[in-house]
Length: 274
Image: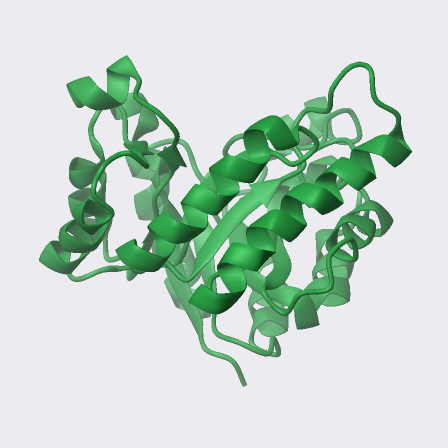
């Protein structure tokens, strides 16, 4: 039986306009064992000024490691979402994310196919995605870094579509970062879908969806940035946890919610089940 732990994606501090280190300290204060930092290429104003939690991959990767060690938490992975359909962006982004993760101490990088180019066909997009993932896998394999593909965009919005992307590259490091909220909003049963990918699962975005959002958006969108507090929406967390316990490796439920208050309620609700 695999161990299931509780972590949190750093998006929970986005609306507080605080830097990465503040978010790590807050996550530890709330009792989270893991955090999932977000990384980006280059430099941008808000992060440099300390008003945003994302970390530039031009920074020292040990910045992340030291912040986590200081507060007694670990990294479940890196949020490294980049458009796989656009190799001019995705190849260097993912290769750098893999190297950054290896030095920082994060075992997984998470991504999705991203918005597609306007002028390419579905067949062309899958060739492009395969090329991007193959380039990333060649860097990830010798470093032991896993790549989690998330259901979020136009092709991964169905179980069959996500399977097709996953099958583009035959590599032991390419797996699934399942998102409970995105899969539900796209109109599918997240429990059945999670069971389908269980043996390929490397990470999980624990995203709950409020009844209000469900009524307004289910079947109309392919995903959402964050959800409500886990345990206060439509997702059956007992069943999610039971499936994760039968996964082939330890799984971290990385909570994706929008506020510190929601993060506090999420861990309280999930702890009762785990």
